[in-house]
Length: 343
Ligand code: FA5
Image 1: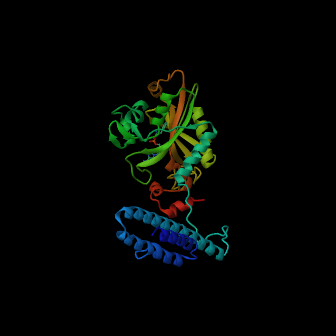
Image 2: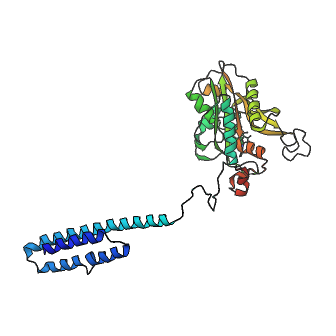
Image 3: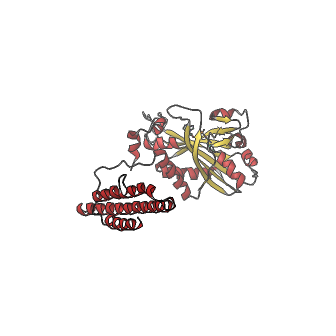
């Protein structure tokens, strides 16, 4: 039996490794290792052998079967590769430089992201660096340290979402002022972009929106510095335009002001202007000189240093820049609207 196994092995190796195609290979598989194949019939004959030879012969036949299966697999992959190469040789040359039949839609930056990036670039040019803070904030940073203690009526101006007091979703980017000042000494010159949350919903207010905070702290910083920086910023965003600083109130700045920009549509005339509601002015954010109590809360001496801060809503800036009158359209993901800003 040993001799015939060796003969079968030699034959099988040579036939399988030179099988010309997949059909012939399949025939050889059935012939050698199939259910009624040569090896199976040899395995059936094991029962006729004396017990002392049966075990060794069984092991040998199983090894041979494994070898055949390996050789078959190897030839199978050689033939597949050969078939692909032949197919490729037949096909006309592939010109990868030809444009495709179907073009896929190209995405673009959201108009609010675009405005934020532009804002950040402008401010970086005059030495402001970017600081960030958490969106899930503590009451202390969002209100308390910003001179807005519990029960202060100004808290009503920014009704936010409480997770579990004192944890809340920040209602403005001003807490980044506190976090940064607690960690660094003046001079400071930073902007803090990010998402903020309020319990609001109408044509000009949404529950989640974006703000950018500005903060500059050093010796002898004055309101004139604030005006200079905001003029530079507005010039970069909209082109040079007159600004108006209207007295206002924020607990964390004193004095405080709303910044109004001359209307980009009616150029300040106010005549029948839907954009500025015929006032000639458009509000673009809040600002002021940092309140001494805020400096005290972070361990700065208000007699030694001074500073200004401002905060602007990015959706508001984008609405003005692109002539959009319903803030909610930024969040509806309507491609007919968003595609107008792709380039
Ligand atoms: C503030 O949030 C102050 N932290 C700004 C500030 C910073 C003042 C530093 C002084 C010093 P106010 O609540 O006005 O201020 O919000 C600023 C801007 O955010 C508004 O001018 C408006 O453009 C935008 N805004 C406010 N609420 C919403 C809202 N619900 N949806 C969209 N934009 C909003």
